[in-house]
Length: 393
Image (cartoon, rainbow, N blue to C red; front, side):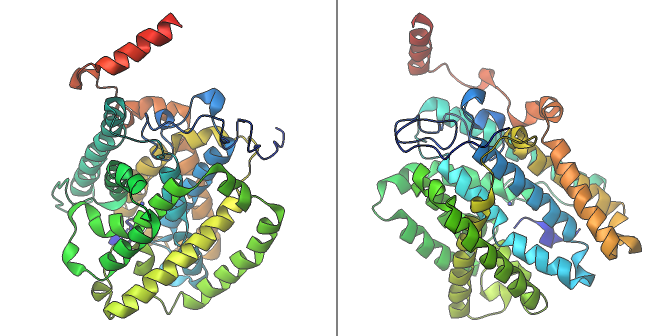
């Protein structure tokens, strides 16, 4: 698997009323999503209590992580298939923006309160350190790459945790400024033509994907209601079809690295003004396709809805499996590059991610994903007072 695999990251219920809290997107009178937990898409502690969970967001997170897994499976197979390369380009246009928008949405109430900073450390920083180290050692011991461990240079899937840490820490700033979204778009454009930024904490991606996080911060429940309207869903069908056609046309003509947002225009061999135009165009396409994706995410509870609480596990763990397959040479098998083999590989990726999101896997790896680490933190007097008040009530 090449370096380009670095991600670049019932019953039908009515739409929630704008006046009443529901188990869907919270309305103005319902509680805002808590930022006490670190809302990496998929961490159980990052979500609301089970009785308040929103099936729409859990479904969105699960479907998005399945697309991530499929994209990573396609990467070593797409070289000989224009159809697979087109699907890869199509999916990469919106799956990480969708994840990041959700992360921003559930960061709206984040501040520097001690308990929230603690969750930021245990839910993002610790998994980043653990898996950045694990991927590096796995690459050295199994892949024989001789890779050094560097916590400042995220590798493969861990860039998303490094980016989320930076985005979450800067949330109070984006809530303070008057026009946060235009400002972050400008920052992303400047980053896209600034090769001097370097690889520390993958700041290219941090800055170029930042507008999607800030967009999530700016969204309200009614915006998600808007994309769920019937006319929007109908309009999204020709949009998605056109995007697939354009992807098929662009597959042999366009550098897929544009969709990863990890390089500057100069590093991709084009002029700075081309980089600005390309980044703006990709922002527009990603936003449109993300809206289309949300339009078709179901609001009902399905068998996979509960798996939305474990997508961080699926995200970080599936990379070890795919890297292991790559190091073992499994992707060099000729039959995998035939249509039937590609279809089976796609199904296998979806099954793999699904299994890794389940509760048994969560229980096994919770020590690395959601450590309590009470020993590492001082007891916050304000939090203790709140707990005493709750106990009294």
